Image (cartoon, rainbow, N blue to C red; front, side, top):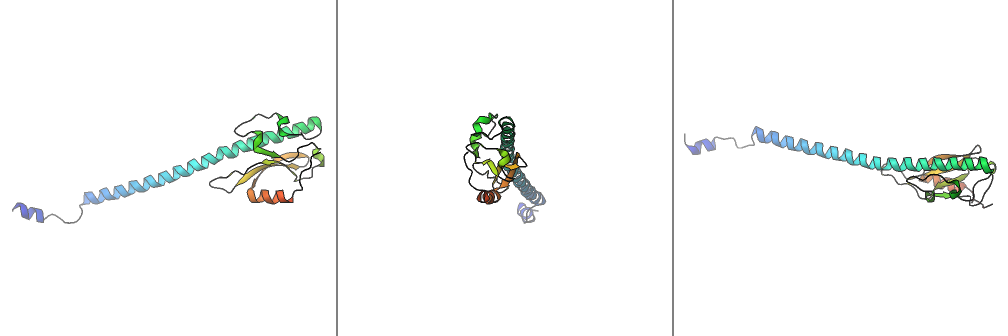
Length: 163
């Protein structure tokens, strides 16, 4: 048998080893893409989680400060800076105070908006939202609202009056 005959007798299609290499390459590519997608999704989710938690903590501190201030002085403070709350990722400037005067929280009907995030938080996987502090049964409580709910509540509220 000559060299030429041996060469012609080889199969013309891809060998079994080449076929398995292609399958492994495709499988590795799919696994890499899926893993990358999951990691990117986790990074976006984890970026939003601290933002939500930090804003919630600061809103809770402000609510506690407002409630303590009212118990002590029997009125609301002139500004939020009077509360002397410890700052975290967000400062007092992150929030809008609707009562730039003072008043008695007993005069506030349930559902009156007292403090809210100045700008909405925009998350990747959820609609925009804000933390709002509202009067409820003589106390200031924290709620998280979507931006449409907040805008509807703000439209229902009468303008805050300075006392």
